[in-house]
Image 1 (cartoon, rainbow, N blue to C red):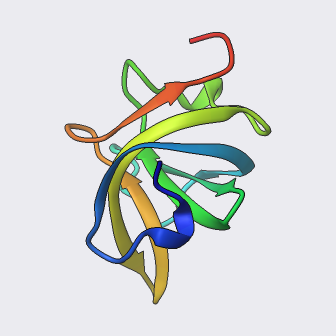
Image 2 (cartoon, one colour; image 1 turned 45 degrees about the vertical axis):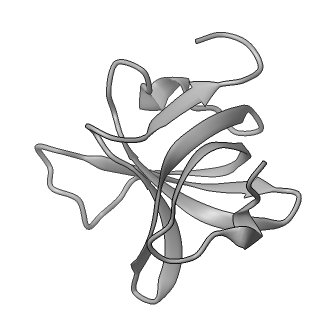
Length: 100
């Protein structure tokens, strides 16, 4: 299983198990008609920012702090910091422990 500290810029990955550490809400740099949400996620090895869009499989109101999710996506950079992106047509977020 992949860990956060093993990811590099440009990597794509599947089934990364992370815990939502902090919800940040709508990213101020996103477009109002196509909002992008962000959260800090962690695993036993590290922390990272998760960038995601709302879709049928991932409703921002259902993403909860302290819950575990299995995510797939790619690694990008914003202002020199690594982030994980879950796109609207690629990548996914899957609830691991419970509802949805």
